[in-house]
Amino acid sequence: MLRVERAFQAFFRRVKAGEKAGYPRFHGRDRFNSFTYPQFDKCARLENGFLVLSKIGRVALRWSRPIGGTPKTVTISREADGWYVCVSCTDVPVQPLPCTGKETGIDLGIESFATLSDGTMIHNPRCYRRAERRLKTAQRRVSRRTKGSQRRKKAVQLLAKAHQKVRRQRQDFQYKTGQALVREYDNIYHEDLQVTNMLKNHHLAKSTADAGWARFLSILSAKAVWAGCRVFAVHPAYTSQTCSGCGVPVAKGLSVRWHACPGCGTSLHRDHNAAKNIERLGQSLRGEVA
Image 1 (cartoon, one colour):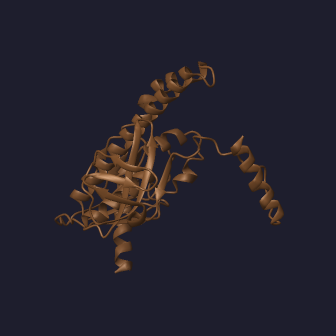
Image 2 (image 1 turned 90 degrees about the vertical axis):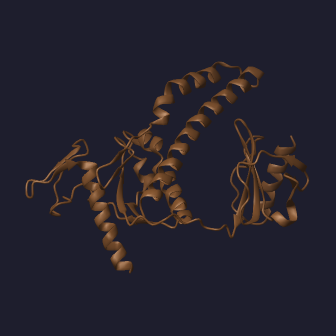
Image 3 (image 1 turned 120 degrees about the vertical axis):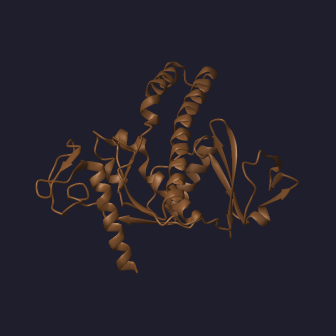
């Protein structure tokens, strides 16, 4: 009842202020799963391996790594298997990797997660597709339970852990792949993908979301900054249609997976051809920037 009264009070305050107020939205108990202390020095501190939080007290932690730099904010988040703390720091020292003098273009796809300009294909793990049957079973278990019952709460927790496992499998693959790329190449070129628009294709939306391209590109950029590498985004238009050998457009549908140019005779996989075009566009972009 207290939440309902507060929602209506906020509603009437907006009406009295002359604002256009919509229907009051009631905040559920599980609406938010995290909260942040914006000032580390005033709201939190470290004390003998413990984290002391304002209004909460001493919290025992299992640190995944030592804190580097100057702590600025602390975020407490609730996951399916417990509570986690994320400490954001500034002035973190960069650890550049030795230069290799190599560069590559990568074409992200569904058949293979990524194809490099030298023809190397990175396998797509398809984490969600492999776990789809298990997730379906867990979801049906929740649907059969009576709302508000303890058995339903347990079923919801099991479903959340199943989804969490898929998410962590995908993130683990993305982090390891990004780390391997920045160790091998100094300059990496990729397509500037509009993943939100690509998800509107209902035939490929599930596979696109399962690949997690947007998340991978953000991880790759962060890894490159940490390792002293550079990542460039190029416009993706016609990278698959243009021949990497002679530059002549060769029209082909999405189902055609092999590129064969009738002019120069270039014959290679469609994604390999696109990766070589992406590398060439990235090199020209570097020339314009320089």
